[in-house]
Length: 160
Ligand code: 5CA
Image (cartoon, rainbow, N blue to C red):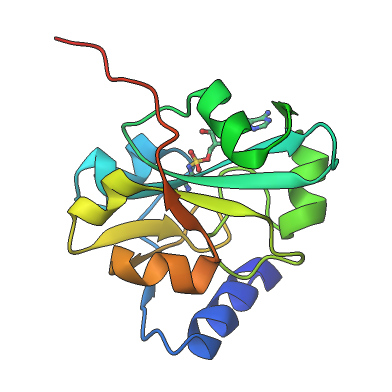
């Protein structure tokens, strides 16, 4: 079993969450994860990371699968300008590779915010440390286990 997966399992256990980690197929993107888990796209917890340009830290925005982060709203929350987080920074901060960044089990817990859209569901699905593993949880548990603050940082959806 991968070390990343083990770290997520241990973090979930430490948080008292009886979440079952599943391997339903390829879950590298939110679309793949929704397909594999058999849930709505917005029930996928995307881990979008930016680099805080003053702090140099990676910052985490847990975002509903169908939403996009509005960079200026995100920067206002962070209190610093945001730039791209590259794969090396994400790996250094979280211990995870892009496509498998979990909301828990980070090497250095990042400052984090949570898309309120996720709270509309009884159950959401998040990456478990690899691009093939996911787990389901009650989104009400996300602030406690991830340290993320519920906030509004997503872009308006386009009208159909
Ligand atoms: N396992 C799925 C959902 S459970 C997952 O991790 N989805 S994700 O959306 O959270 O992760 C992919 C995200 O990583 C993309 O939305 C994108 O924002 C980011 N990403 C993809 N490629 C890069 C890259 N080269 N550098 C920085 N971030 C990237």
